[in-house]
Each structure stands twice: as structure tokens, then as C-alpha cells.
Amino acid sequence: MPEFHKLAKADEVASGEVKQYQVEGRPVALCNVDGELYALEDVCTHAFAHLSEGGLEGAQIKCPLHGAKFDVKTGEAKSLPAVKAVPTHELKAEDGNVYVALNPKRVKIGGGRGRRR
Ligand code: FES
Image (cartoon, rainbow, N blue to C red; front, top):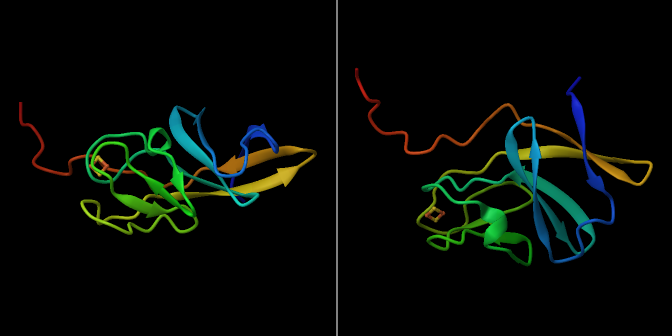
């Protein structure tokens, strides 16, 4: 059973908008696409940027830094320079609130050579 955390009131994010929340120390972008809510890790898979600062274009979220777009429903990267998907989170609605179960997958930034000491 995934563990659900209270995220927001169901009507807190208007249609066409995205907001950032912190859950267990992780940034979560809550997106409202035509009345349907979707949550994904609020971190671009290209370099470091918060996707919620870029905003929604239909069912895609656009990175504010270099313009990569991701499908908010699947997390799939839809345009360069990002190629990796963003983890999406499971949501459930209850009593007028929205709860999120965090995806164990996280965005790894950089992914290059580690530093040796
Ligand atoms: S950091 Fe998002 S496209 Fe480069």
C-alpha cells in the first residue's frame, strides 16, 4: 500500500494552473488540466529547474530554463533538450482534499562523474 500525504484542497489549483508543494522534502508540482489533477516531481530531468515555474501548455508542462516539455499525465519528455521522463505521483481525492503517494523514483540531476575525495 502506498503511503498517502495530504497535499492540497481539491479546489486550490485552478484549471490551467500549476502550483508547487513540498512533501517529505520533495518538490511536487500539482497540475490542473481541464479540471483533472496530476502530480509530478517538480524537477526537470535536463538540468536543475522547477517545472512549476514554467507553467502549463494544455496537458504539457514547460521547463522555464531551456523550454523542454513534459506530458503531465505520464511524465514523458516531449521535447528536447530533456529526454528522460519526470516521475509522476499517484493522487487520490477524499473529503475535498487531494492526497499524494510519492513515486519512489526521483530525478537524478547531472548523472555525470561523481567527485572523488
Ligand atoms: S533545465 Fe529544463 S530544459 Fe534544461
